[in-house]
Image (cartoon, rainbow, N blue to C red; front, side, top):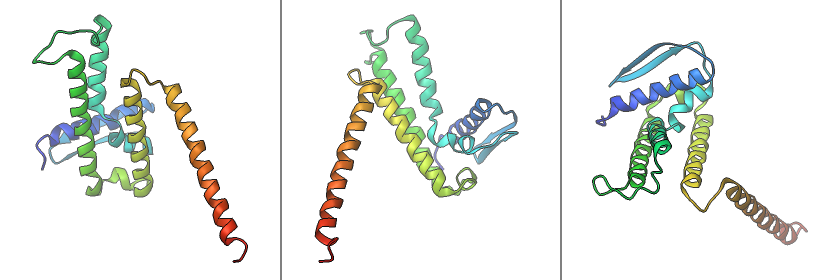
Amino acid sequence: MPRPLRAYVFGHELTHAIWVWMWGGRVSRFEVSREGGYILTDTHNFWIALAPYFYPLYSLVVILGFGVASLFCDITRVEETFLFMTPLQWLFLLLGGTWAFHLSFTIWMIPKGQTDLTYHGTFFSLVVIYLMNLLLVLVFLIVTARHLTFAAFGRELLENAENCSATLWSWVQQLHAQFGDGK
């Protein structure tokens, strides 16, 4: 068993609880141990069930902490170091570490037969987990890239989708011209 298992289980169950509260539900019991955990609630849906697999709680705590700190000083401009790193370097180190923690435990837990995944269908659950993690990575990259904006990313995504569909359509037309005439 991995060493920080209790920290993972706590974050996993707390994420379920946070999403229950976001959906207006109540949590009546919250249990965490090294062997596993669970919550009892009056609300359930696939977002609540799958949230721990795409909602990196500890990464969001790091972002929130640095966000609060940035209300008091501009951490992007601070040149002083603590243990040879600037605050912005610490942000990226902690964000990378917590994201790696989230991702490694998510990958480790998926084949363990989690009821979170089987309750709404394993294939559906894995698709949602994959797409939500991809979306979250995109959001993190856009936010951290100074020269990139959401609008610019959207324009480029649309342009690439148009180019891809035009290329695919061209291939379909070529195949139809070659094989469609019954030759």
